[in-house]
Image (tube, rainbow, N blue to C red):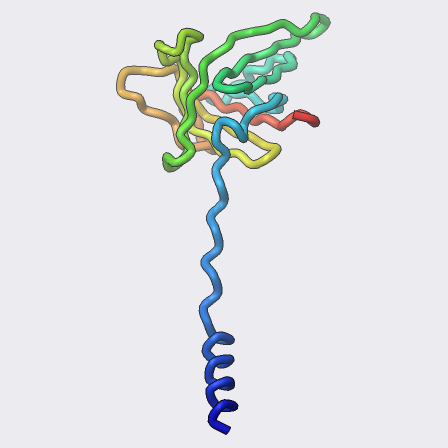
Length: 152
C-alpha cells in the first residue's frame, strides 16, 4: 500500500508539472538570410520605388548585391554592399557598407522568416538612428518586402 501511495503521489506531481516555456521565434542571422530574394514591394516614404522594374537581391556570405531588370531590358547588376546584421538587437538590425567595408551607407531593421524578408532602412547618418516601424514610414525611410526565390 505504501508503494502504491508513493507511486500515486509521484505521478500526481509529474502530471501537474508546469508546461515547458516555448522557445521564442529564432531571428535569422546572416547565413540564414543567404540566397536570392525577389522584391515584391519597394517604397520610399509612401512612394513606389520599383517603378515597373523587376528587382532581386542576392545575399551571399557577407555581401548583398542588387539586380535590376528595367522593362524590355536584360537584367543588370546594380549595387553591391558588405552586409552586417545583429539578430540579437531588438528589433534585429543591419547595416550595408561600401564594398571596402569601411563606409556605412544604409542602416535599418529587419524581420524575416524562412521565405519572407521585410526591411526598413535609411541612408546612414552620424547618430546611427534606424527606423524601426514597418507600418509607418517617415519621408526618408525605405521599405522592401522580399520573397525568397525557389531553390535559394
